[in-house]
Length: 353
Ligand code: TXA
Ligand code: MG
Image 1 (cartoon, rainbow, N blue to C red):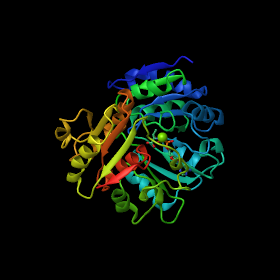
Image 2 (cartoon, protein in one colour):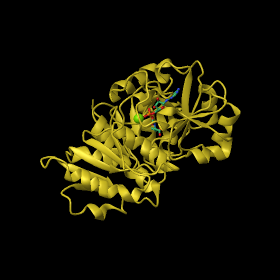
Image 3 (cartoon, rainbow, N blue to C red):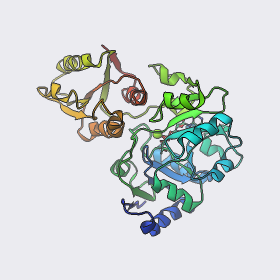
Image 4 (cartoon, rainbow, N blue to C red):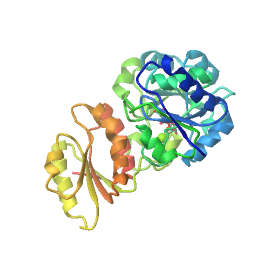
């Protein structure tokens, strides 16, 4: 299949209307479009059409029991896809939509089981990125959109990542620049009296608890080993993993991490290509080693880290790295989302100093 790449630049969306209409037309006729959101690039199709959602699973190579998130642009669409919106969900919507928060609700009959992976619940979010919002409005449809990567690989945060993974598999890729946050949305299940956090993201536990009080946290997030039956079905699959073998090195005191990584590098066989994924604060400490150094940004501003996280993991494959050592982060605030992705990228290969 020929994939059309359409660039939407920073000028007003109004002046790019004909391109946006062309993009929406792909969706309306049942084809797939990858486009940016504020979190990661999404692979979008008509979320109410089981043929479109089947195409999504196929293009990604994603198991069909791993449900999709519906992206909406207004509250009329919310009523169409969700049976009820509990009080706490309403408060979260007021506080965080449009934005990087996905809410699990009871599904309406019109939402096909192909979209929800056979579940009676549906994941919904109203993104804040203007490009996807406009595509939703012009198509008039809730868009099912998982991250636009091949299943198991790091999520895409730039159009070039989507082109690497999905070129010739989908009708259209929208190049709308880099994603603002770089990690996927926070997911919270609001079908329970005490809502449950299913995936940490840039909207943190403390931000949520300020709005609705105490929530619980699914054990797939708190445990550092694979969980057999996580509440977010997708969590049981391999995630975010480059081909390189990643070792994540953590410590209660982050200052102890670099010396441990240097020790581990020195133990590696000399014919292996090695990389260190680190931070601006520490990259100078590794300069005498024969390794590729990739800094994710500064620990002073975790958004710089989330923004470059998946690009850093993808860079391992670009450089044919065999073994990568990655510095860990404390699990406060956005650090929880960063560590959640890194633990999975490492396949739970975590060394605590
Ligand atoms: O930021 C994001 O959320 C991005 C952008 C494109 O919006 N999308 C994204 O989708 O990360 P995906 O498919 O990669 O991750 C969706 C997660 C999966 O782990 C899935 O299991 C969970 O949401 N999920 C979807 N529907 C669910 C449901 N009804 N109950 C529990 N978990 C659900
Ligand atoms: Mg994904």
